[in-house]
Image (cartoon, rainbow, N blue to C red; front, side):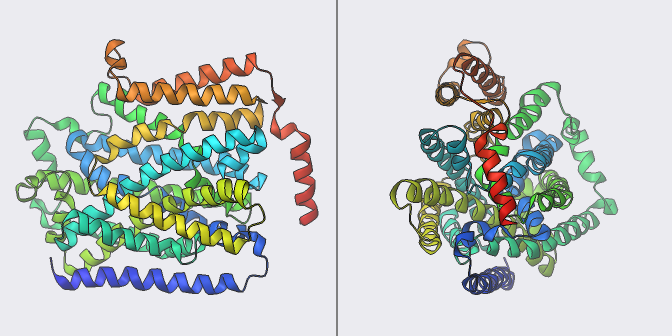
Amino acid sequence: MNITIIICVLVYELILITGVGFWVAKQNKLQTQAHNAEFTHGGRQLGVTVIAATLALTVLGAPHIMGIFELSWTMGAMSLWFSIAHVILLVIVCLSTGLWMRRTGVTSVPELLEELYSPGIRIIVSCVMAGSIFGVLTLETQGLAILLSAMTGWNVQYSAIAGGILGILYVVLAGIKEVGWINVANAALMYISVILATGFIAYQLPNGDFSSVSAYYINSGNEAALSLFGSPHLLMTFAFGLVVALVFSQPANQPLLQVCMSAKNEKTIIKALWFAAPINGMFGVFICVIGLTAKALPEFHDLGPKTAATTMLVHMLPPWLVTLLLGSFMAAILSSFAMTALAPATIFSNDIYRRFYRPDASEEKIAQVTRIVIIILSIIAIIVGSFLPQILASVGWVLAWLMPVLWLIVCGLFWRRSSRAAVITLVSVWVINTLWSFTTLPDWLGMTDISNAYVMLIFTLLIGTVTNLIFIGRPKYFNSAEYQALVIANNETK
């Protein structure tokens, strides 16, 4: 690849990241309200633009780019269900769980669960949620490694190291405000560049459009690859299974909710939805088209699903557009990497370190601990991500761990709160998830093709409902004295 393009992309990222990072860090030092958690939650003062861009790019990372490139080879246009599922997810977060988290004033999902249930639940969920998020972090690292490898020709291991360093810088200088303001610039760049790239590729194909790509799939007997609905079997096992997995797990996940916790108010979150959902959803369409095209062209087909699409972009686009496009891809993955690293670090610093070791820790100390954990987690993710596990195949198992967590939130806020029921639900579903994923149990039951998400959702609802009927706990949180006291305190603050 042209060394000038490599230098331009890396210089762009370094200047933007360090420039915004140091500027935000300087602004944070001028803040007099240290209790506002500037590093992890931006003082809870982030506006619509920053919240919208950060929500969109937090879930628009390696699985959205490299994952759809990879999946389009085997499932074609059905890979777009990954984007559709994320649009639905953003709607749910911005109209429900994100609002609840902002309203209760907590710093993390485990902290809310302590308010609803007990300190023990907070510890259990802190550990499991941090591990689940870390699994996604390794996938984001892999995406950075593949992208940098295609750009530079470096091996994947060296590319993972370079990408990880950029990802650390994306967040470690000034926290979530740094991520947010960088995302605003990168979201605009991303959309402009991917639209231009798709147009340039179409212009260079026969007839100046994608008709030759369609002909390739039709003539090869794989016309189903051009359909969003594909085969009924894949529609039920993959597409709807993916929607269920995301919709019934990720509304309880720390990275997205931490963005909502950082908003000025609930209206900010609702307004941000109108920008975040289209940005996220339409981007997947362009990525899918590029992935399908790469497979249809003989000169790139032999490279395989991991690197064909990025290599095609490098060879078919003019250098200036390659710089913009690969820079925007890298920015999207870096944003997800940053929030995915910040979220478990926030859980550790607030739910473990401050809660059980240093209750009197200052915000400066919490920021310091969070930075250290970000760096440690990123280093481990670089090592794991270098082995290139299949991207989207790894996501389903990771997501299932959070299904019972979402149940606990909804149940505790709107129905009843039993700590014993909560523990039984969590442990039971997690054990079933592990057995279903790593044993021959699905084969023995004749349910091999049944999506993990369906099974975990059924058991979550069944066990969660039955245990709450058996173990009667406290009334719903939104009708409790604790919540009324919180409302009064917030009104007095205003």
